[in-house]
Image (cartoon, rainbow, N blue to C red; front, top):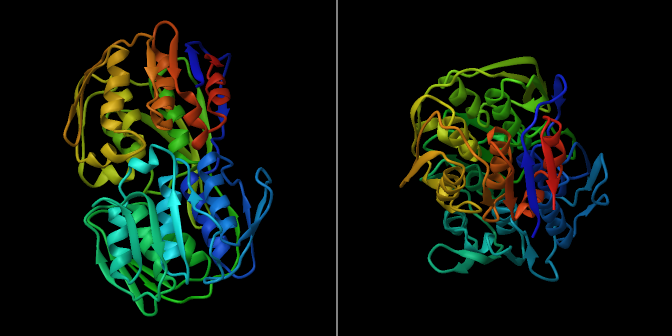
Amino acid sequence: MSQLLVRPGSPAGPVTLTAPGDKSISHRALILGALAEGDTLIHGLLQAEDCRRTAEALTEMGAEMSAWGTDPFRVYGVGRQGLMTPCCGLDLGNSGTGLRLLMGVIAGQNFSAQLTGDGSLRRRPMDRVAEPLMRMGALVEGGGPRYTPPVKVHGARLQAIHYTSPVASAQVKSAILLAGLNAPGETVVTEPARSRDHTERMLRAFGAQIEVEDLTVRLQGEPTLHGQEVIIPSDFSSAAFFLVAGCLLPSLDLSLKNVLLNPTRAGLLEALGQMGAEIEVSDQREVNAEPVGTLRPHSRCLHSAEIGGEIIPRLIDEVPLLALAATQASGQTVIRDAAELRVKESDRLATTAAALSAMGAEIETTPDGLVVSGPTPLHAAQIDSYGDHRIAMMAGVAGLLASGETLVSGAECIATSFPEFAHTLAQLGAEVEVR
């Protein structure tokens, strides 16, 4: 088990960073590249453990790809129904995104496959994906009423459905749309709020006929997908760790370049704005139909806010960071409508509260959120990552604010999404060691 040690410090001058490629877009580029006819060339693919597991699973099903670590990364498409029965179970490691999206892919194939993962992933429910896929005609088997992995998906001749999702979830929506590629007719998904729309954007770029109106997505089934050249911007969720550091550290003059600014992902910008943060956005442009730009945060005195409702799906991965920012804001910040975090890699409401409480924060959990009182000076502590990469990295950023030496145990989980995190954190002037 590795440990991340952080001692606060100050950079020698202005810092310019480029976060790694977006994880959500990387998963989708690999999957659609495999289902397309012709080759797909991916620039800036996130070379992290979660994406590697998706690539390996697709390879097990007959897709051919470049050697892992190559950039640009080439996927040799086999066509919409060209995948084959894997010789063994598909191990997605810690990747809930990979497992759920591949459930949708396999549902429309003419074979069965079993998908599993590590101990954390085997505790995560898959019923929200299994239920609509079974309505489309696939058979899904899993553990108990919530279909915990391993799950076995028996592909079938699918029928298009109009599905009204009880939750705003890009993973649920994407699994249905990927299954809908092999369902004749029109597959329709309606959500209660906007979730990430990378699948819709990329499906359109690969040649699918797809329409989006308000909270409803319509996909015409059985399209021919064509290989594309894909340029992947920096992951907003990875850049967010340094964005929050820039909002909280007066000594830091930071620019974050080529950051994905998709409005379904960048809710943290709005939430921090509600708390009084000042973040400059420049060099805005589109890359492969995704908005990108440069972010420059400025340290300001933050104040409390109530964050909930439709914004939550757009910042769900950044809630631990939002809680960290709230520890330095005056007043009581309330984060609500985030019960989905109870079933992530860890119970992120509980683990966020535990980590920040250990560092001196005044923070309480509620059934669907957090209540944070501030401002509170933080002190160094030994923090358990709970096997959750976002908790580990949030604690590392908190160590920049804390007096003393912060030690995060179980830091190897960071490799699932951001292998270079420790090196990047050190560029902010901190003393960082991995033991």
